[in-house]
Length: 114
Length: 109
Image (cartoon, rainbow over all chains, first blue to last red; front, side, top):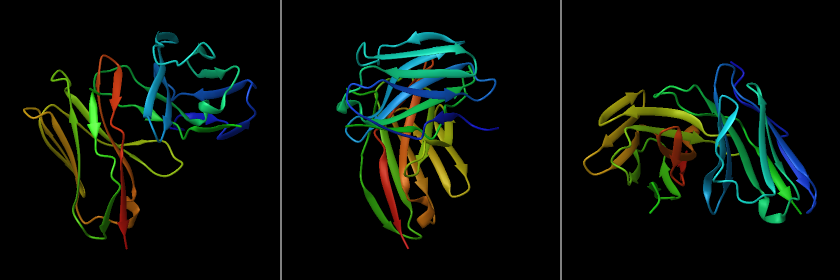
């Protein structure tokens, strides 16, 4: 089991640039979640997909944020244009869709927008 | 009111101490509770999960749920420096997970 794989691990970009974060969930997991973690706000759910369909995107902060899941093994989170306040660690997590199945997290992408 | 509240700490204890980490939750419908451990610059990893009330033990770790007071606890016996991490409590309902803010624990050798 390779776990949830995220890339890149670190991203430093200038304000206004487009940023794309990538995630490969665990094989066989049919729910995928994008979280953002900051010291001030902790873990915040941005969006989650079930069977590749976005179910709840109420946590996406602005239209600058978008997420896609074109197939069961890949998802992207895009920020365009990026702003310094987007600096955070972004985590992808996946789970099997059963009542006692926990979330499995990747190791995150640390985003710094200057 | 947040769904899950957790004291952020930090908590500093000597090696060998018993550690108690606590959370409260707001919705009595929650039945499934988890503790995640997060090391620096890593993702949260599942440490323990419990269903409904009672205790669950795994080695030096015990998770406890008191549904009457909406209180969940994690006890660590014989704490080790390798236990130094941030611990997050969590619960979920209808595929939506709710996390506490995390308690940072430092176990001093």
